[in-house]
Image 1: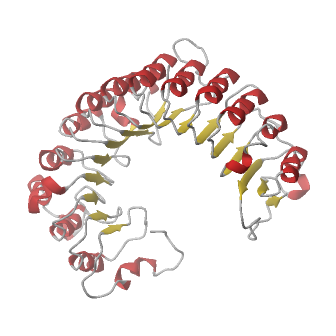
Image 2: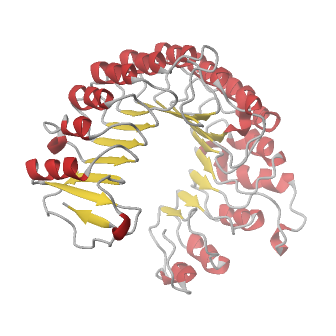
Length: 417
């Protein structure tokens, strides 16, 4: 669902036919307006085939319990506000009633995915675990800043978990518990809280190392952290050779290995060398041109690459464009790459879906040269400055292939060459 400007946008539920429906999935977690609950409840009641239900933050715990009573075949549940509220149906709601809601209709055997948990009352986690955790394959706690004490008893029941999204509030202790209990884990995302405490108390190389040692079937990881070491990344590359996605975000610019002070070159070099199936890579930390030499030499399966605040010269970009023969999507931010690096990819751009470069050292002349030599590429220049103040420098280059040619809905701050 997408939010619209219409004042009556929340009435979309009432637009469904009045009779029975064949709905199998009804998910509106990202839809911010409040939905009339009576209409929602009526829609769910006449949708006996519903398997996936994801509600937004306005659906209270008591209302969720009523919806669950109408969906005996539910396999994927996205909860709303997971805390007793002020609504009448929430008054007096206790843990026993929540336990009943999750155990009714054999749901302990059918429920495989849980998400949502906005405004979570942490004491409910263990209650759910007693009836629903055993068969869970997917758990999304990215809206719930759970602490190690809150997540440890729960995660211990999730032996079948394959996908896990958490906030870094779980800290290294929580990730160590995941590594110990969730041996089938394939996808992990560790996302940052908006406000951080002491960096030493959040996730670090300790948690990453634990995951790599305990979850050796890992296929995809997105890991936000305050600090990292080459040794931890190398260990992951050795323990998890089946990785297809490795996205590491060391928060703060140009952060080196916090133990040795060295660039993170060898860590990322090990990832592309040892994980031959890698298709998506996001780099971070202090990286020299050597890291990109490794990526160009060994990253032969990489299709999507994101780079920020890295590299020393155009040589880094040349290594990527000349070595990564399957590259389709390239995003570069705030790197010292200029026209020479860009022009080194002329042989490959027609095979790519897009190139995005912002905060680099490109010039208007260099971009015009690409447009001249590759007429079937659409070359857009996006400016953050008024036209009267623009210089020969390029703020943002967005380049993509198109059979239809340049788009017609061009705003004033975009120039198509």
